[in-house]
Amino acid sequence: YDQSIFGARWTTPFSSKIVQRSQYNEKNPKENIELKGWEYIGIDGRPIKLRELKAGQSFYDEIETFTYTVVSDDIRAITFGSNESRYYQKYKNEFRLVSIERQNGFSVGLRYDHRIDDESYLSDIIFKQDQNILAHLALKLNQNKLVDEIWLVKDGQLKRQLSAYVYNDQA
Image 1 (cartoon, helix red, strand yellow):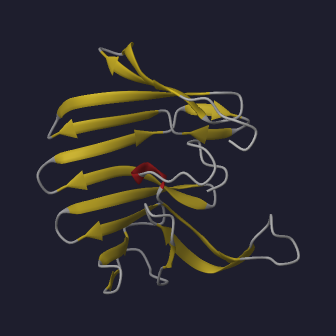
Image 2 (cartoon, rainbow, N blue to C red):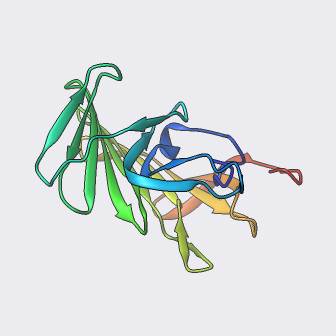
Image 3 (cartoon, rainbow, N blue to C red):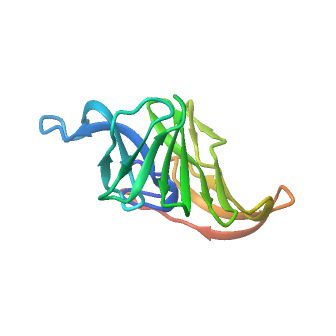
């Protein structure tokens, strides 16, 4: 999370992801040791070990109170009761959040259209109720791959700036 587009150590509901399990490397603290399996990095930033599953299988974690499902080789889901499901799509060696869906028809879609140095980054967050768009936010990134501005989008055009960020050397 030191490399988050929101700044070092910042977590948001949109920064949760599923990553390769790892452990701290005492000899080289900047590079973790990769382990077998996956872990869920929740919105609180904690890594939670996930069971090894095959496509179509699910597991309910009683301690964390969520169900982990391997939908396919490219899609994973974390479901909280019957109220909320979060879908993660494979990107390189991790699964990143692409959709949050609630039982009442509310959903959030995330797009990763920013391209910098052959990587893609979060560009848009779209809030919907059923099929109606409630809000569309566009993120503008700076040369350091950090969010500089957030804009409200209306009819495909930047309508109003909602926020602007300034970073120091530590992000």
